[in-house]
Length: 129
Image (cartoon, rainbow, N blue to C red; front, top):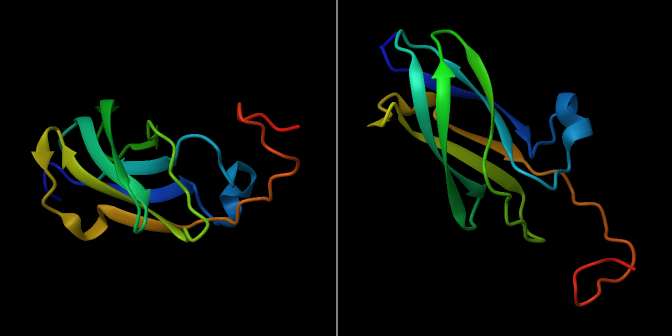
């Protein structure tokens, strides 16, 4: 394997994967699992993510990801869902401040779980009554 080779292994949330059912649907930050498949220790990762067809956000992770180690990463901002949103996508753009060259496993999509209906009425302050 190359010295820098990071893969996105799974999307924990948002996801319809049954093993993550208790974490979905979500209201907070998306969460993914990455793996360092290379020989170099990774100290930072740069991601782009969002609902397919919608606005994207970016996240810069810093830490220590040793060779063959997996890491759960929470992406810093929530996702802007729309009634027609069906998929979430995350893409790894850089590792150790260098553009990722092995792009075969740097992008992953998940199906979005249905959003439960909102019960009650929203007030102008955003609370439910």
